[in-house]
Image (cartoon, rainbow, N blue to C red; front, side, top):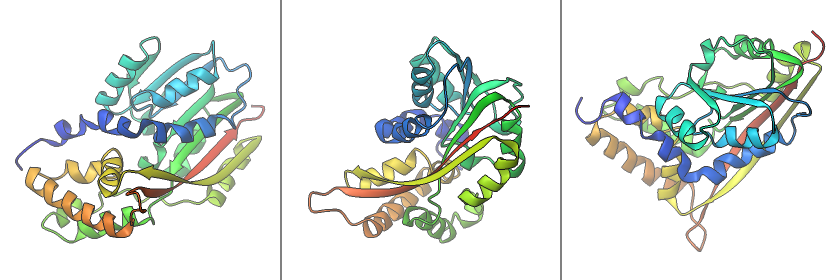
Length: 265
C-alpha cells in the first residue's frame, strides 16, 4: 500500500471532526440538559474527542472534578490543548478500568463504535455513585442513505476484500436499552431525535462523514483508492440528498439518547 499509513491517516481526524463543531456539540447539550447534576463532584467524558463535549460537561458541573478519555492520541492532544485545566488520558472505552464512583459518565457519539453493549453498559453503570447518571448519545443512522452508500461502494470495487466488515453494525433500539438498564437503575430515560443539519451541498456532506463514518474506510485505502472511493461517494450523496434551491442540503441525522440514573447500592 502506498501513501499514508493507517495510523498517519487517522491522526488528522480531530481537525476534521471540528469542522462541524456546532452541529456535533448540539446533541450533547440536549443530552446533558436531561441529566440530574445537582451536587456532582466527579464526572468523566469517555470518548471525549477534541474536548468539545467535555467543555459542555464542565460548564454543567462547575466545581466538579472533570476528566476525559479517548483512544485517539490526536483527539487527546486536541482536548489537552483546548482544556489544559482538566486531565485527559488515552484509553479504550471497552477496557477502561477506573473505578469511580462517578456522579456523571458522559458518552457522546462514541459507544456506537464499541461492541458488546450487553456487557459494557452494565459495567459502566457499576462505576456510578448512588444517584449518578450514565448519559449516552449515539447516532442511529445505519439505514440512512449515507450509510447504505458506504456499504454499497465498499462491496463494489477493488477494495472489497479489505473493506469487508469495516462499517459499524451495532443495531439496538430504545426497548433493548431500556430492558437492559432498568433492572440496574432507579430511572432510565430514552428518546430519539432526528436533527436536520443545513450543509453547503454534497461536498459538505462528504466532509461531515470524513470526520466520522468514512474514517475506517479511508484509513484502509491508499491515496489513489481513497480518491476514487470519495468521488463515487460524493456522486452518490448528490443523488441521495438533493439540494434545495439555494444549494443547501438538509442532512437528516437520527440520534438515540439514554440517561440511566443509579439508585441505592
